[in-house]
Image (cartoon, rainbow over all chains, first blue to last red; front, side, top):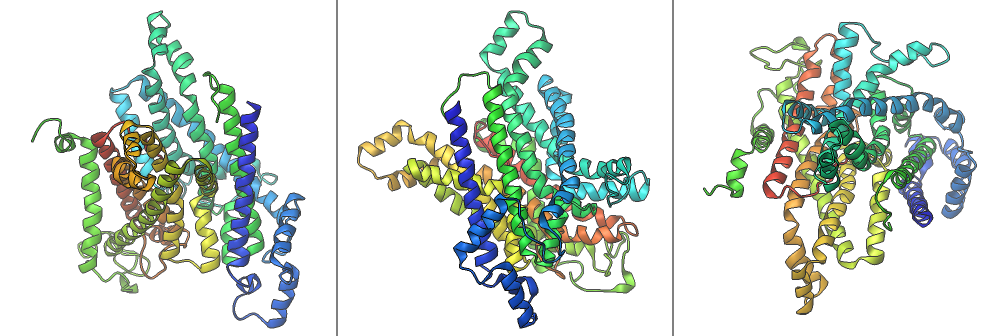
Length: 315
Length: 282
């Protein structure tokens, strides 16, 4: 168990180092002169020279790489060139929007998708099953930003139940902020609910064919007990895998959905930083997101080890 | 036609038939757009802007008076081109890596698995953003980003399928008569994993169309004035209060294409071999 966790931790660290090298290579080495990328072709020579000095471009590559890693490790993320503010503070402010959005969207997907999947498996081959499968196929095919647009069209512009975009901020208006997140959460969570329903259904159906389920039925365990006590418990592994992946999807999803609803989150920050060519911010945000995805993957591995009722097999 | 033959099963499989029809519609639309569209796709006519569906413009006109149907037809071409090239690139690289990992095991296998983790830790949109930051937005860069995302998908599926083959008797027999790992890979492994590759490629095509739509919605795909479905939805957002149909049709085009390819993939799996393990990410 300990060896398994250490192996996973080591693998995650390796991935992180590799990712940091790739990001560094793409953003610092590939463009030739990052200062020129950030300021554009028509920049004045003295401004260019000043920025080169500010970014430390006069140093050799390996010094710059380790300086960056050292800064990241001590949470000194530098200053944004475009916003003229501290990157770390900016990221924390943006997480105020993106973190609740991600957690609420995944919760929404679980609360909708898991019961649908269980229901479909329990009614295998009947109308309820077909209904869930149709919802699932449709939900997987529909892009989340289109769901967002349609929600805005009907519920904001048409019925005026929800704001079409923007975010008041938690301190200013808590309920208003929550209200502003309803449509983005649905848009982000609905396709994920569709995926989860499908995965949960097939995981449950696979488990239902197992001998121990037949044994449980044969010894007279009530159907509800079979379904939740034996089938669901053993079908949880693929379900948890996909829920963990959803958190990673939120990163990509947030960039698009925050654009649709003009939410000042991490996704918008990345998007604006590309337009501003703010390499300092992009570099840090990409690594931060990678760390988050890797941390979630590690957490899932731990959960596996905890819930898996079968004997442990070496990784 | 013998009952139970693949063709027989295909013609009785509902999702295969619906998916096949929708995919065919997508391809035919794209092919027709090569020679004919109702109106020129980039022709601007402010006098007839933001019209709803009519006899002259079946799906209406956009904020610059361009014909929406013509632009959707052209967008089909764009989606297919991006999807096809991205999946082909990803499949070529991924299958090669997966076959190599399965044949060599050991460090090669470990290296490829870790590289897969690395790419999976990067959402496709982030890869695209990194590429665009340096090289600027274009359809080509969208293709590269989606292609890179496809490599580990195919590498994993290929490795898994190939590994289970390497333990089988006919491969050990091949080894026994002195065939090298390369010969065995091409003579026995590759021909036996084509079913899963066909199914996975169909699913990845659907994923690629969705990803392209997302990237071009953000302005990271095909550049104006040429149309892409995602970009059309982005433009629609500004004008949908005046003309709601603008926000409907491009989205419907994306959803029906993706639905068609997914149904086709599921149908193919059922017909070829229901036990195939398809990877679903994206």
